[in-house]
Image 1 (cartoon, rainbow, N blue to C red):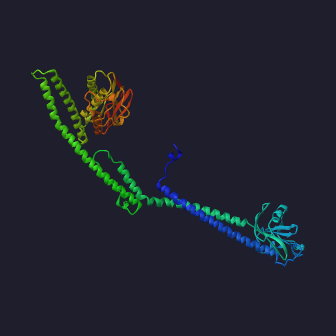
Image 2 (image 1 turned 90 degrees about the vertical axis):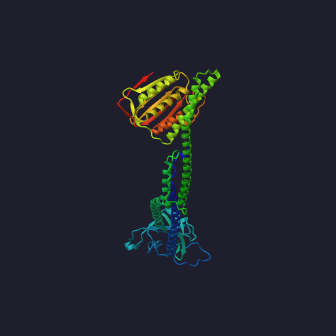
Length: 515
């Protein structure tokens, strides 16, 4: 089995909520990405403007360059601190500056938080010098006047650096990007937190809203389940369940489903009602025909027997014909009686219930079967201490046992061992008829209790069988609110009749085996 086949399918409610939350997540991701990009561009634009202003303050006003001479002014005016611009007002802490010459960076440093007073030596700016690796990183910045991002080693981090040249010389100035990166990180964290909280809230609210929206569909499902639990296979069916009109409005999708289900239930009700009327007519016809046939069949048997036993001598052909007439009339009488019994059971005729001890019934039925089939081996397995009693119609239960034993005798060869067994239980009692014959073909097992069921040669119709014996067994057992089942394999076939409401005369039971 594949993983997909074993995976539990999602309900419609779950799929709708997941789809809505996924759509919200995609929209939130797009909005968050665009917001982060726009905010980053804004922060970098501010950083570039601040960096450019710092560089122009360091380089001073532009100067007219001679047509020949050195490419760079060597530095600031004499007597001026070259990196004094880092200590000016509004300059961020950690800003860097570098003085350029024809040979590269001549001096470089970055501002610190603490400024001191040099006393007689004059003011001391809060400047800390850069090492060789940091100067080399600055020296690699292009001299094109455009802002560039530079990663300085030694833990200083990223800087936005720009080249400027003016009346005071050539300089590199830059401000740290730590504030920009922190702002971007804070924005991303806030966006993720807000998006996560929004998705959770959307999931909860979506579950409630979708549940409310699908409530009519659940009512439709409840109606369908109520119909599914009805016994529609037989008998008169009162199919009154319908989807409420509020959930059967064809202007909505759920209403279309409810309206379609109501139309289907109307058609099913009509079909079941027509089937019930047809079955009632057939049963009434079978009952009436069976009742009317009993008298002429009895007359045929009587006249045949009277003719055969009369004083007039009959030839052998006539005696044979009269014997066959009696035999077939007897068989047809049994068929008519079986059909009449089934018609009465189908019509729900009440049974004569009374406390019935099963042990005498089983013993009498096995005794009759032993007399009818002396070629079989008959065995009894009965409770030792007291027999179970059930509320039942004794005559009908006796017929059940007779039919099961006759079925075993008729459809198994001579020498087969047939065992009648009673198994008491706490709330029910089971009666089993087991034989070690050839068994029932697997193809016949699902229909063995149907009327006029026929087996193959190993269980073919012999000795006048009508094919209604097991159908009568099931009808009588069902009328007692019981169950009948069969298990069959070569050398073992077991018919089990389970009757409810069993009581026992004593609590303990042991089995007596009677050969």
